[in-house]
Length: 337
Image (cartoon, rainbow, N blue to C red; front, top):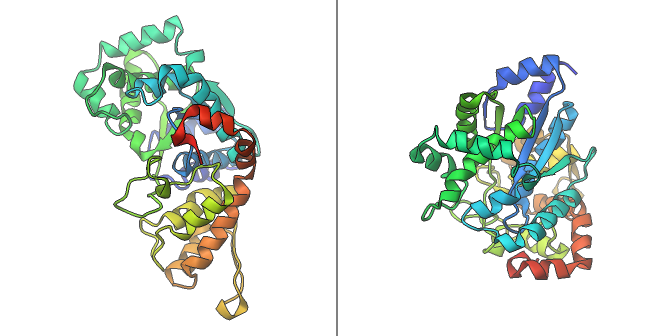
């Protein structure tokens, strides 16, 4: 595959980036690697899993991917995960990710505490902390941590996320656009202690199932789909999801098609009676969007197709937790489907 083709796969479905020219140079001379981090703070839903679908583009481009289960970060973020539950939540999150997507090549999983407690890593935290101001650290963490009454731990959070790039030995970090301030912080501060800046890649955040104006939240079940939700729950939630006819702006249904279905399945099939146009098949998102915005696809037909794809996609993780509900009960009521 040509370098330009690899770069197109890297940029696909992204909305911002830093250091792409550096990445191009590396692609020409070496095997490139990337990582995405997930703090095991709560249940895993589509808002979390969709950025992981980017791994499929990387695999096509020959880029090795690591998935960091950032267990210490989960507590640093205003104790979103209590210390006594971190181990259980780490294993839960890893299992969800392993079973939720049809991996062609299974990514490498790394747990943060396996290397973040080392002497060298801790010394590097101290080094960066002597160089950054409270104002800059707060800005870096502002869209990721809770920041209601900022704890010291929330200011350490972006320092550690920056260092993860070096200690995971990767060339690139990717994640949601809410990570932008931390990624910019990493590019600024890693060189100050002798490390190279990495390429940073940002993906959009999908909107709540209820549409714009309602935040996606685990505490509001109708705004999210957990990866292990029942078939009936998925059907109901998609059926009731915001999906204005012919409009893709802030549309969670078309976003799931764009950022989850096509990267993984490379196709979308909409089944419908002949009197409503018959079946429609698409091999790329752009051709689908063209027909949807032209109102050639009714939202209910699209929802049925998406429901079928999601039920099939998440069958392994759903069946696993149907047999292991004791794990969800131990984690707490917010984890139940």
